[in-house]
Image (cartoon, rainbow, N blue to C red; front, side, top):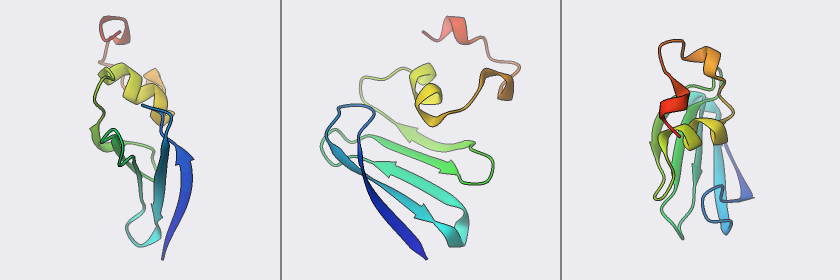
Length: 80
């Protein structure tokens, strides 16, 4: 079963959608206005696919709620 909730886009602030897809443990956040897309695993929070015009890679990680300790080999200071 898929649940869809209306959200504010973390990229542009307009209305977007978050799809919780239980069958595949996927959460897809998307915005039709700015083409923002973030697909994460609902169980681990790991990013599967991401596209956000105007956002850096580090910003996408921050919006997804991931912590730097999940990526010990990434220097987040160089991503900002």
